[in-house]
Image 1 (cartoon, helix red, strand yellow):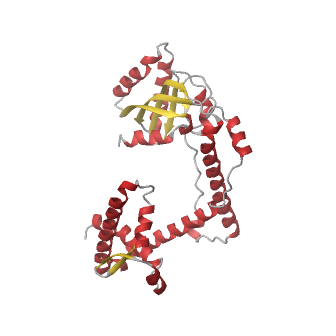
Image 2: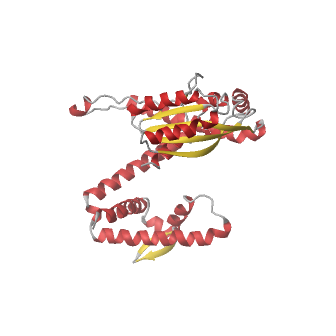
Image 3: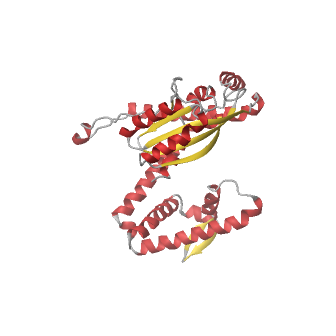
Length: 322
């Protein structure tokens, strides 16, 4: 068996054994309906329903067809698992390690979700306070349109790129900056990709949003990262406000997510402080890694620096260059 085939079977085997391990006792056989048997091995309605739930909301008109497709995939999975067990892959150290890693991940995630489930819903006063403190998200909400240039460039090349951009930004005609900048990038044999991006205020980092809100058409952002740079120019901005009633569900979701995150972080700190953690000698000497904050999105002109920008846009743009 080649490496590619094993990579397919490993996660299938791990998932199936985990599902099987979650309940195949005598009591389960009495209460669980069988959806299909594959060479004598049962796939239950419970397993089918779990797989369907992971798909999210399926339109009623497509429910039966989707159910059949999911059941067919479970049958295919079971056939592969049977072959893997027949070849004794369930005893392969790599497979055993993969199953254990999956088990650990599932258990850890389940506990975190249980902890986060205790998050309290926000009340009317908290929602009103959040709404009033973030006019750039609601009363003065804007939809921004950027022209972005994602550049694959080593770190030591970034100061030169920034210097060129600052030089071009001094000219009065802002509409020509990126065209001239693209020509310069070509002369430097730097790979880049330009694209138009439209982002509403809520799609931008909350802590940086006030700076975005102050941008004018033609303003530039220089966003350095380890693997490259993104240069963004604001080409248009349209005001599309939300009143408090329209904003309420979004604020509730945001505040609850923030509370869920805080609960999980606090629990992790509590567990670490209460635990006895003993590193082996060779690992105790390892330096603690320093967590570098995301690179700042910095206006090229003399305006105040922006603390963060849309890293997801940068990552997507640079990935296309690889």
